[in-house]
Image (cartoon, helix red, strand yellow):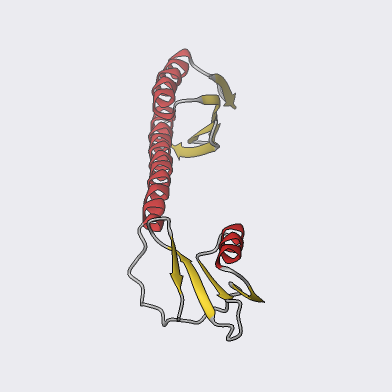
Length: 175
């Protein structure tokens, strides 16, 4: 972690630097990977302003606090930074949890109204008269569940081949 200390219109006292480093160590444990931190202290008339800019892997945080006392400004800034870090971490966790919930909800379909049956046109038939063996060959080649074909002969009757659940074939022959 790289820490930059900046003091505007004042000197950076060693006690203040030690206090900031101690708080930043606690912050690093809380955040995990922190790449860069800028601590900027400034004084304007009777107001002390503490700014903390944190650049981390997931993004950046900026905290500004201003009071009549330097140490009080720093304490408030570190406290509000800790609150922001905890809030961001909770948001991140909740986002991950929500993704898991959404996947589970997609896997379990909600109760839906039963749709009215609809008719779907199919081209699983052959107009050309063919023997049962030819119909089976074409049925297997097209990987269909049902196949309607015309039987050869004078009457040219229709027959149906279908795939059964046990893997065998079924034949509906209206003779």
